[in-house]
Image (cartoon, rainbow, N blue to C red; front, side, top):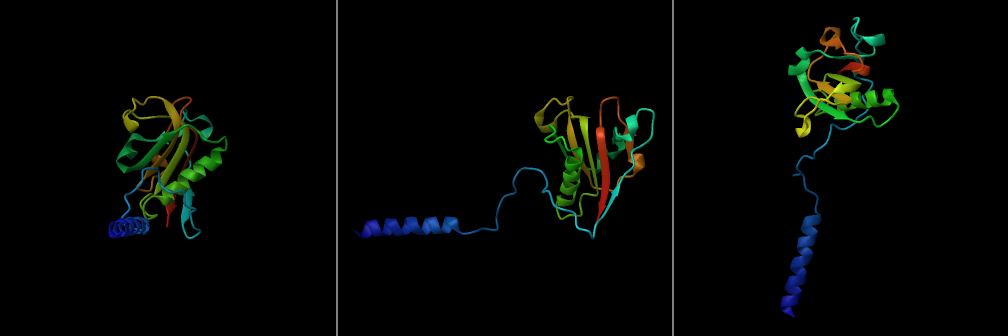
Length: 160
């Protein structure tokens, strides 16, 4: 009888101990949180470059010189026909990165070439991209996109 009581008590205590909250959680995989940007922050849309390769000023990409400022990148199939909503979500993820001050610029566009090695892929295919940078990019940090790439592009800085 005493053995059964001891086993039952031990099992109950183990169950309770495992149910207690812990502050020692390992980070989870996934993108930055989508966090609304407070009105105390300044969001500045960046005008696209104007070149002959830039179709209606809506097709542009970050220039190669921005690679050193790359903070986070995500390439995925478009999940909505509402491009404004997807671009806004990318910007809110920029704000949601880390402690809300690390990401300074967000870029979103469809039909962006996925780089080789992205999550072990060969890359080279077109996808929707949300790219984040750790510095404020300016108009000179973007280039006109090749035909059919970087469509619906949006870029903005976030300063809080």
